[in-house]
Length: 351
Image (tube, rainbow, N blue to C red):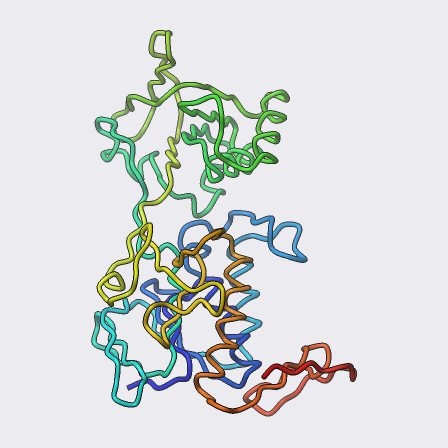
């Protein structure tokens, strides 16, 4: 039995940052993740994808963000159960919870924080004949290493942020990038739409809208695709790669059977207070939760993790007054007894 103060389900960015915030409160954390390494989607799906909305980083690769978060949390010595999925949860007589994985590993904690991102997920695949026969032979639904496409012809289909971001990124890597979308309007960030248009004007990206990829061709590997544009005859385009980026189909998995209140395939929480679920002591933070005004952004997950840890401290230490100290004031006390000093300043308290 693994015992800890806060059991975190999901080792993505939000889960990793929770370790740091909990550590400042002298609370130990243990993380469970079905993936074999920490980082969630940032490690598994797009480690080389640049992220632009992390404070203080004008641009940082998703994999590098994971490494920075691991470095930040390392001083608080979190435990990890990787490659195992949280399967069941049982409330104990003392109010704590026992979470058991699909491999039978048991974890006990007074607080459970579900930070599972979108949950388990599969890419949405377009209904194109023979598409699956070219998977890993020129067809991919996730870009892990953009260097795979160095000096190759690439066709991307989609109209969201991933399609736009990768078209922009690969314009400096691939010999040719074609972006195809079934509408003239894109769903992604306006800056990305403007950037794609700018690259189109420079001849670095070819844009075909409104259109759809309707067929794929090749023998042992992908050689060409067919594009159908409204009111025009089908067009065959030679390419080395076809990457349909139509998003992920998220599933909560076993967590959906834990008695939590589910809304829009996400866990409903009380955002007016502390992101607690309908089960006292069980919290949901990051992309896995839902509440009025919810934004699925990494930085929002960081904020939710911070408030959740404050609430967890009060549950674990009932009646004990916590004095909030800024890290610029008190420094950071590690579990190993080391201390990073900081200058003296005013301290605020919270009852």
